[in-house]
Amino acid sequence: MQSAEDVVKLILERFRSRRVSQVPGYNSFGYVGETERAVIVSRENGKDTRVPIARLEIGVSAVRHDPGVYDGGSRRLRDYEIRYVTSPVWSLLHLVTKGAILGL
Image 1 (cartoon, rainbow, N blue to C red):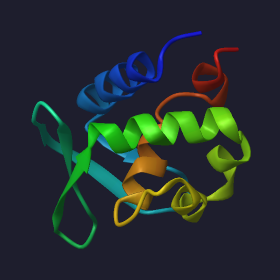
Image 2 (image 1 turned 90 degrees about the vertical axis):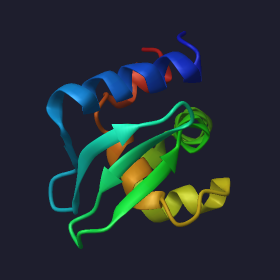
Image 3 (image 1 turned 180 degrees about the vertical axis):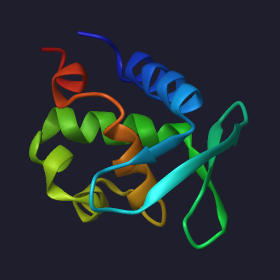
């Protein structure tokens, strides 16, 4: 199984190439840029948001702990201490399949 860090690298590669992340029926997030520790996304309301890479790694670990998080909506990430960036983290997780996160 790939490490959470490796899955996050794959997510970021896909986000860079696609330039957008969106779960059907939910808000979209655009790729603005990256720093060493975060990816910057644009929200539909026009505000840019810094999403720490560490939060994406927690999101991957959350799905591995409870696969229902992947399909359950961004609010499920709050149980894993992700706050304020639940929607973009949940959307970014969907740039890969649940199977890829679980190592199937």
